Image (cartoon, rainbow, N blue to C red):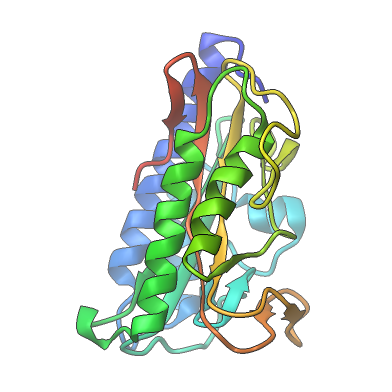
Length: 250
């Protein structure tokens, strides 16, 4: 959405701040021996306590309140009985609606001891982290959404990694998924022109190998076909005359 009013901007900031806070608390609880279902239960209680709505579950009929994708699972991992282990590469995607406005953010982390995370998983994670930074830096009033994807693509492919072009960011407002689409891969100067106070997510998914994917038997979890690791970071961003303003600092 384009947050034209002060009320809209404050509502989006509030929802985004709570989303970031929840994501931070979940990250602290993602330790060896914990399960993805336990994280989902915590998210459910948190969102209920603050009077929010778990929009992944309510708007898209996703089985969980959060997405928990591990190692070669790229996105939409369904939380459940899976036990987390030292050295796992965990992606936690949180979204909620609070007092009529939405927030959405994702973090990738290594579970357990830092030294236990294999080098390839760490490299993909850091590439995705930096890609998001470069995507945010490309946000300018008057620029195009394709400029965001171009900045991320140029960086990631120079490292020898790939982005999953089929998964994009999206506009965000009173619903979680709105226009415009924010590509992860795109030529510069293409797409929708960015206007002041436009709010959207930027969410690069970086893979170490082939960008081919497959959907798991649960009908939701998207895995990288070659079994190599995948990493994702996501922020909700507002376009301002000073550049991209991140609303979901974690």
